[in-house]
Amino acid sequence: MHSVLEQITRSMEELSIKIKIADREYPMKVKRKDEERIRAAGKLINEKIKNYREQFGIDDKQDLLAMVAFDCLVDKMADEENLQVIDQTVVEKVNHLNQLVSQAL
Image 1 (cartoon, helix red, strand yellow):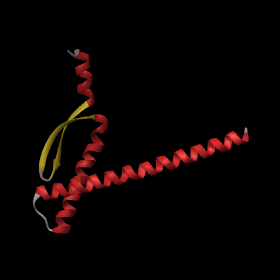
Image 2: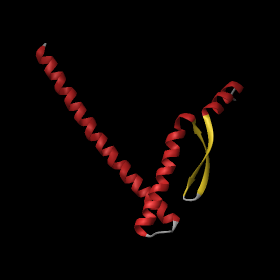
Image 3: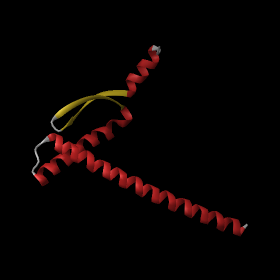
Image 4: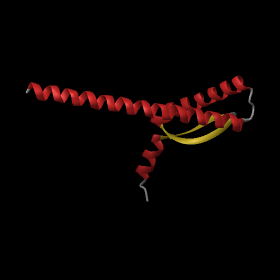
């Protein structure tokens, strides 16, 4: 059982907000530090829905949401691949610097 202080602290850290996606409101509790990012994500989803609606003339919300979900996942996968390449490059450069330092000593 949580103490009253823990419950008060947690309630101060959380906000109750509503995010509107595809003309439907979704109530949620979020951490204060995440609020801006969550609102920005909702805005981005709605912008993508609007772009797909205009670009392809699609009005079905389920189709639009599926296209946005697919698009977001493809973007996330591309970002992860790019991060792996960057990580590998950093490791190679650090190893090279270690070799240079070892040779200089």
